[in-house]
Amino acid sequence: MKRIQLASIAALLGAFMATLGTASAQGPVPVGFPPQTSLYEDAVLLARLLPLIAVLGIGFGVWQAKITMRQPKSSPNSPTVIRHDFGTVIAHWTNGIGFIIGMITGMIVLRRLPRPDEMRIIFAIHYVGSALAVFGVVSHLTQNAVTGGMGLIPRSLKDVRDGISDLFEQAGIFGPSGAVFGIHWPQVIRETLAETVSAFGFRQSKKIGKFLPAEKVFSYTPWAIIVTVIVVTGVIKAFRYLYPIPPDFIAQVSTLHDIFAYAAIVMLGIHLVAVLLVPRHWPLVISMLNTRISRAFVQKWHPLWYQELIAKEKAAALSTPMPQVAAQPLKETKA
Image (cartoon, rainbow, N blue to C red; front, side, top):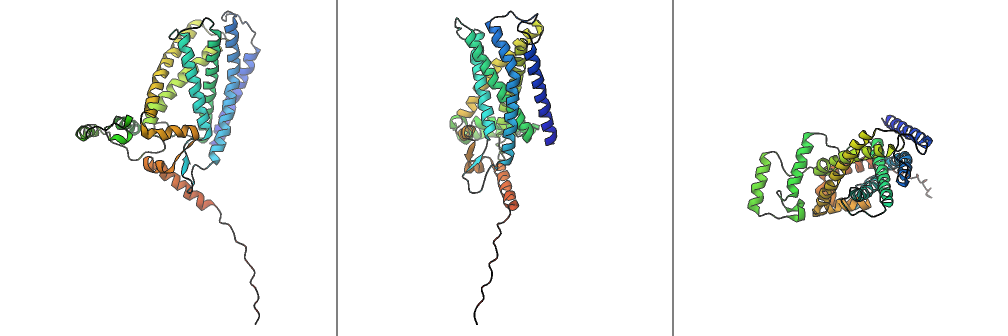
């Protein structure tokens, strides 16, 4: 399986290199392309650099995947465990910063924010954000392709049900411990609401793994869809400066790009509310900065993940050879 994954990555790498070579061979002003201006030249530069940026992302993802597979996530003597490896943190913040830059500059381009007299710098900053996003997305996909990371992808309707139950918990229906702002509803109201939602099969989850149910269903999945559309449409918009693409098609792609950019802004607000306004989630936010989380926190709030960590620690201990003690020669005693 690993050979297939590496072969796929190598094929993708070759495709990007071929695209880079073809793009570099294009003339500066191909027939049928937009008029040559300073903005045009900047866009051509971005389009020619995108394959190289993607290749760098692939290389970084493979490198981090190899490190991740060799790195133990916990040890019995450590008060903390690794929740996110270094590559995941880099990909997350590279992608996040890139998208925030793209959102702000995009709103300026669309005249939703005040526009300066000189727009070239705005487009240049937008291209920098695009490059960061492409690097983050490609490195994330590559790393997970090599390691087989699928923990954030919902796999059944049970995941959806648990995700909705998690939202009810954040609303304070199952108590204040996992609620936004620690909402403490009166017991009568809370019990009534809990019984109502429980009748439809929504209950407070006691068997939480590494990732929260709502994190998988209402965070990662929507982000994956939004990011995919924005990146793909953005790459098409950039490649129009290297290849003759029909203007009507570009107009449709641009509309789709803008619609999902608005969706990204809404999703960012929801994401920030979920991670910043629920006190129980704060250690999870910190782990996206320093990669680690308290072992006691994992044991209390993520019991399934804690059991997995304990099982791996025991397996590692059994596979570690015991140090051999050299036999000492017996001393002769005088009669």
